[in-house]
Structure formats: C-alpha cells, structure tokens
Length: 562
Image (cartoon, rainbow, N blue to C red; front, side, top):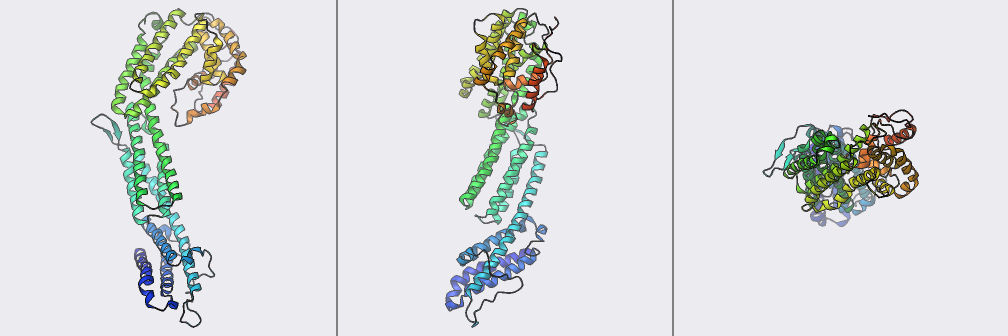
C-alpha cells in the first residue's frame, strides 16, 4: 500500500506542470486553477503519506524497508522542488499563519468565485514545511539503516578469508578490493537510482559509507600483515582500493549535480579514505623488513661481533651473507609487488640494516660485564672488520640507487648512524685524533635525547675502553646544555612511532629506548638517575615501554671481571 500511495502521489504532483502550462490558460486568471489544483494535490498526498508513516512524527518509519525510505525521501524532494518552482513565494515561507491537520484550507474569497492566493500560498507552505520535516526523519532513519548495512557487510568481508591471487607476472593480490567495492558500488548505485541527481541525502549516504569503510580499514588493516607475501599482497590491494575509490567518486560526480559545498564535503570524505588506503599501502610495503630480518637476526645476529667474526672472518663473511639474503628477498619483492612500492620496501630494508647492525653492537655492550677489559680481543682488528662490514652493506644499496634514484638521498643519512658509532669507537680506543665532542653532537642530532646519547656513548666506551666509561658519561653531562640547545628533545618524535606514516623498528632512538628500558647493566652513575631516564622514556614512548628495569644498586661499584 505504501508503494501504491507514493506512485499515485508522484503522478498527481507531476500533473501540476500540466495544469499550469496547458489547463490554466483556458480559465480566467482570477480563478488561479494551478493554485487550486496544487493545493488540493498537496493536502491529499500529504494526508495519505503521513497516515502511511504513522503521523507527522514518523512513528512507522522503522517499519519501512530501506528502499521505501529512499523512495519517500526522493518523493518529498520531488514535491518540494515542484511546488517551489511553481510558486516561488512558498520558498521563503518557513512559518505559516495556521496549521491544516484538522481542516482543509478555505481557498475561496468572500464571493466564493475567486481564489484567495494568500491562503493558498500559506497552505502550500505549511504542507511543504511539514513534509520537509518528514523528509528529515526519513533521511535520518535511512542513514541509520545505511550505516548498519555497511557495518554488517564490511564486518563480513574483513572477517572472511580472502582469495589469494598471483598474476602471470607474479604480482600478489587478494580478493579484498573486489569484495569491498563490489558491495559499495551496488549500494551506491541503488541509492543513486532512487534519489535525484542533486539530493543532499545522496551525499550524506555516500559520506556515511566512506566513513565506515575508512573506520573498518583502520581497525582491520594489520590483520593482513602476517608475513612477507601477505605484506606484498596487502600493499597491492590497498593501492588498488585507493584507485577504485577515486574511480567510484569520479563516476558519481560525473552523473550528479551537487552544489559546490556538497562536492567539497564529498571530496573531503573520499580523500580521507583514499589517504588511509594509500598510507596503508606504503606501510605494508615498508613492513616487509620485519619478516626479512627475522631469519637474519637468527642466522647472523647471534654471531656478529663475536670472537669468530673478529678473528676469522677476514672476508667480512657475515656482512656478505646479510647482503646476499637481502638480494634474495629483493628478487621476491620485485616479483610480488608494484615497482613504486618496491622502492619503499628497499628504503625500509636499508634503515633496518643499519638499525640491526647498531642494535647488535649495543647488545654486546649489555653482555659485556668487565669494567677493565675491552669486549674485543683486538680493538683495531674489530674496528677494521666493522669498516669492511659497513662498506659491503653500503655498496649494496648504492648499487640499487642507480635504478632507484629516490634511494640516493637516504643512503648518506642512514649510514651516517653507523659511521658516527664507528668513529666514536675509534676515539674511545685511541685510534682517532677526532674530538669526541664533535661526534657526540652528531649523535645527539640524530636521537634528540641527551639520555639516549649518554647511554649509547657510554656503551661504546664500555666496549672499547671500559675504564673510560665514567669519563665519557661526565663529558656528555658537561655538554648537556649545549646538546639540548643544538638538538632539543622532541617528544613528538617519540610519539610519531604511533603514527601510521612511521613503521616501527627503523629509527635509532626508538631501538635504543627499547634496549635501555630493559637493560640490567650497571652504569657509572647513580641508579636513581638511570631510573629517572627510563621512567621518562616509558611515559613518552608508551608504545615501546619494556618490562625490564635497570640494574639495582648505586651503579658506582666495579663490575666483576668476566
């Protein structure tokens, strides 16, 4: 019955133009046939529609299907547009002299032959305003249903196992993109077919759908990053999803006639979604370093900087092995992933290589328990071995820079971390005439935290010249004001690790904090000072806080010989 009422009401409203253009000229002007007809149509249609929805407050709207709600919204918009085009005075009348729920308007003047246009306009304005309130209620109910329907479908899609695909060229994808956009395309097409090309309800519905697509993506995106292959597939999928979203919005805008404000609203919503997809594609590509370095940590990490590395690996065997492993994985990445994202992955792998090497070195300082003897049997030989390692790793990435120009500017920045650590170790061992202060400044500029700088420099001296560790701590403390002035601590850098644009495990300061909050090595300062630093790190780097605590005691006693 509801559909039949709307169909009849649509036919009656459509005839208002016919009456105005074809019939009204046949009658005396003072009869105002079009006003008489329109007023009667407005009241008949509005009464029947209000009855169908349970009164002007829409008590029965929840019982309508989503298609019926769409048809109701579309009909009210059609009625409003027709009445306001036919009777422009109605447009400005948002308050009427009386209501017409209980009675029909008295359209005739005193002689009962002429139409009272003031009353006719007032009655039309009342119906127009009353139906617009119905429109608001129906639109709200429709948007609630759209939100629920979208959530249910997205939950089903993201919760189901996707179909894995590999193209003839080897590119990995899943069915995620098709599963999501097949639904959203059908949903938008259904809405667009039932609403006018300029309907605000269409814009609002699209924004609701896009907003929930964005929310669900943010909530579920990490579930697709399980290993190297799934990271590659996810990067390709998220890139395709951004492109599909852009195509879908272009098609919608080309077929509709929205106001500039509504277009701006739609573009803002779609840009947010495309931004999430694009950043997630990059994040997935850069996350491959986690799975690349798992076997490297296991095979190489336990042997690096140990006795065999120092005494026997004259050909820098471990660095060569690391590079060969990276080469193997690079071939996989070029096969599995789009070229643009391969560059992002390689940048991530370069940073991860530097961080892996530095972390392994600092872990040896944690392991070293002597306050008198150096960690290495021969400091000069160990430093030379490090020089060879760094050269091999750097040359590998410089070789890739020829085909990846974007890589060039990052090579110097990343490997400066290792050259700084190496030079400080040379100074500690007495093999360099450089001033320690100069390279402490360089380190501070990279980590922007005096506490981290103290710990790293102290660890390097502990490895090379343990008896000088207290001296270098005091040196850094004497430089503290200058270090803060040159590179002040920036909590935003720490908080950045929680941002999607940053992939964890690729920054020197982040890596150092993750080690030092769990360190149990006594350092040549009072334990309370270390505890204060650790507490501050755990607060600032909330995502990185570890469970370990610094060693107990006042930190000033000599450690035992190994």
